[in-house]
Length: 112
Ligand code: 5GP
Ligand code: ZN
Image (spheres, rainbow, N blue to C red):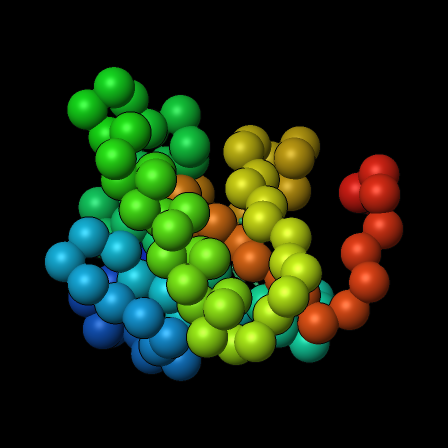
């Protein structure tokens, strides 16, 4: 999608600090980290949110989660929190599916 921020990161039109990339997904540092480690994992394909994961895309979701774990391990994180915000009321501001991974500090529960 031409007006999507994360599609522009996928295309290279907007720079990001890359952590991992392959044919289907990309991991990069969040520009406004909310923890000592805060990175995002996104599909290259534009899906507005996790509801874009239909029956044919279940493997893509699994891959996003596996890459999240791998990058967390590469960063030496023994604990981390994985968050997917779906919809504006849940805090979603970029409408291209992304998995947040936060670590490096104690986390509170319930989340705000
Ligand atoms: P959301 O609020 O939609 O769940 O998360 C969007 C995330 O994208 C936020 O954590 C925000 O800091 C991050 N973000 C917004 N714009 C950019 C950008 O241009 N580059 C990077 N790397 N992250 C961004
Ligand atoms: Zn997009």
